[in-house]
Image (cartoon, rainbow, N blue to C red; front, side, top):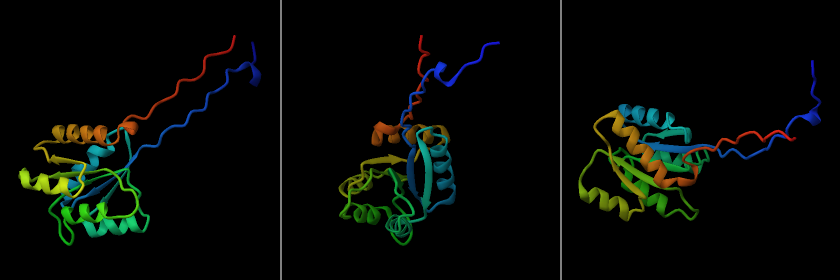
Length: 161
C-alpha cells in the first residue's frame, strides 16, 4: 500500500468563481412573478432572484440596500409607481445603475419607445408559453450581462511528474 504526503499531491489552482447574478423582478401580478422567478432560478447564471411588487417597493429596497441587483426585469403597468416611473427614477440616480429590461404584455410600439426613452436597456414582450419565456429571459440575460452569463468551472491542476 502506497501512501501520499501532501507534497506528493498536485497543487490545487485556486480560481475565483464569479458569483451568479442577482436579478430584481418588479412585477405586480402573482402568476407572472412566479413564472418569471422560476425561469430565472432555473438559469445557471442566476444566483439570487428578488421581487418587488411595484416601483415604489423596488426603489425602497434599493435605497435601503436590501438588494443590489446586477439587472432588473420591470413590468410597465403596476399600481403606485408603474414601470415608466421606475425607469425614470433609476435613470436619474447619481450612482451608476444596472441594466433594465422591460418585460411587458404590451405589444404597443409606443410602450417600447417610451421605455427606451426612459433608459430601458431592452424591451421584451411576455411570451405566450413557458418555453418561450425561458428562452426570452435567457436571451436578455446573455445580452445584458455577457460577462456573467455562465459561471466558469476550473479544472484541477495536472499532477506533477
